[in-house]
Image 1: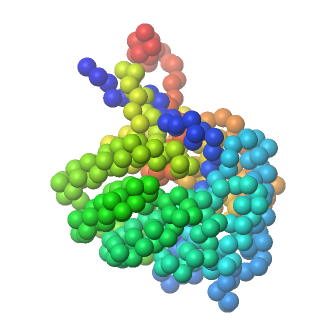
Image 2 (image 1 turned 90 degrees about the vertical axis):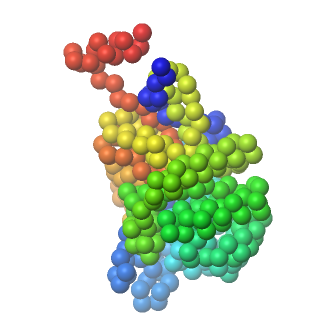
Image 3 (image 1 turned 135 degrees about the vertical axis):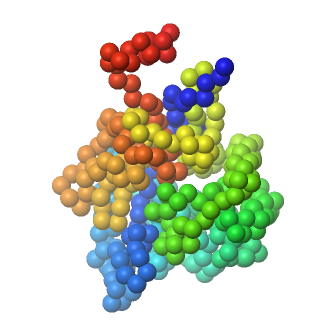
Length: 350
Ligand code: SF4
């Protein structure tokens, strides 16, 4: 009988092992609540990024590049979250700084934005991830924006499968696929345990989502369809972060999108060894550096004395690895020999 028990998760493609990803949270809007102005970098009196904080961000980015380059010669990709509220003329300075330092720039936009938002910056972005909510933007506008962005950047669209607009969401994804064969399209079930990075406006709405049995099945099929399409068209090779390979006890290995593992409940990695930190880092709006977006291991602050390089893996202490960025990386069950389990383990490695 085949055993689906996973003994190792790792990056699927060699090309992705050459990238070091920094998930950079630009402001704390995703953690903010309506009515409270918590936007970190914005000066509330002028509603602009204050020069002071912009300078701090630039310095932090430069320190971060230096820190990573002392340890690895991988290509660095800065992946920004939470830039929604910035004036593009200002945030552009951060993107230009990365270009100057030969780093790649990626952003995750919580929604599509109007064309004007992109006009000033699209030439500076290597990778753009757009989250599509069928209830908030019609497909024609979305198509025109993807069409504009794909000329200068590699584009990936996440279709957020809304329970009440299920057909509309699916049709939108299919329309984008049909129109742009080179665009990555992924279908996402809303994971209520993973809304931290979602802009509060959407987060409140998404909290109440509940899928029927049929809808869950359909999402599963759409994710497999997306995976097969991405593989067939070699789209993952153009992107900075790809599939994971899961190696099972019976020696099989399967390329999966991280959302597939989450949907199958294979993301309970509590007690596993995790190499996050050696392949990617997460930096919050205050310069705090963590191995991953699960915030398990604080490594220091870029504006402080020192940041510790995570030379060794850690033992995961989270109930689930919910963030799709965190899931993509090397992980394996921690094996601790003791008198109770030694027989079982001996059998396992026969
Ligand atoms: S939750 Fe954090 S520590 Fe645990 S496996 Fe995921 S990235 Fe690693």
